Length: 413
Image (tube, rainbow, N blue to C red; front, side, top):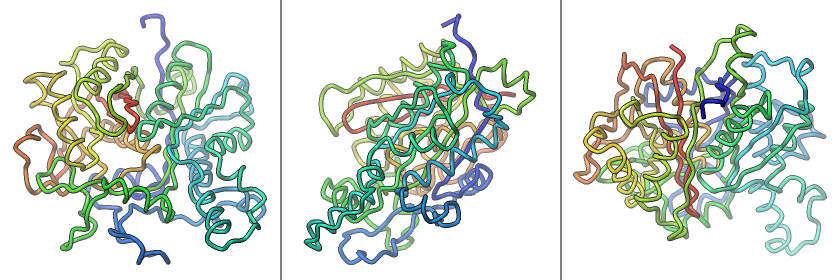
């Protein structure tokens, strides 16, 4: 890896349950303010546990009506987050070789709302009047394609759909292209808008969703807690601008952090049940990619979904890699606050990890009031930890289908 270029993150854009700017997202995560809420939707009565992590977002505030009619909510999120990220990076795309700029986007469910609406018209209303743009709005590659069109990006435009690791894979693959010298700029991240009736009912049927905390619904996702009951679905997008370190320095840009490497592996065993071996192999692959010893890791952003099985497996995978050193590493599970953004989760958690390192903070794992004897690592329970020199960090993304990805990040101080 010594011949690889260093890769800087110079732009961040985010539309999320914790806010629609990097500063707002960080402040809410730091203060432990949950974006999870009871859903207020017409189909409320059809849901067993009507919880979600929703975004405050109206597409009409960002797009004129003719364009809006062609954009599923997932593409709206992606376009706004990408525009934010390019603006943050102070990227003059007119001066960049567009053929050496790429789009790398992860999504697990694509245009879920468009597809759900189409099925309702077809089967529920028994009508043949499907929207003419249904295919173009619902296809998984629409968000990436629209980013390419809006910014006239002529290089590779990729869409990754590996369930919950989709956007971590997208960032990792973008890092590879920039680090190897095949691209000069990449915009990478993920988008997800899965809060349709069909999607939520399908997740309910899988029996992985959290039950509602009757005392306070916003605390229903409880990663690593003894009384955890499942995950809460969220929506949103997060995008990063990646460029060679030298180019960022030459432009005099503030750098949010550095992507050091990433690891991939596949649990070739079960489509929903993760394995300790597979997750540990991914963490080791990330360390190797980044040329890091385990002792160099100062913090971990856990996948931490809040399901009984997954949190235990992840805890044991971290122990398998770090041994007794695992007990000294602050581990954060931010899904307690922003829910599980599925294909966009890895990107949002990468953003939160970069921001936490910038502020020398370990963000809290909220709603952890009942320690689990089997999940016995340092999960930074309920209160952020200040003045921690976090130089190097991992962020974990483990997925249905067994596609695991771990990103290795470095702070710039």
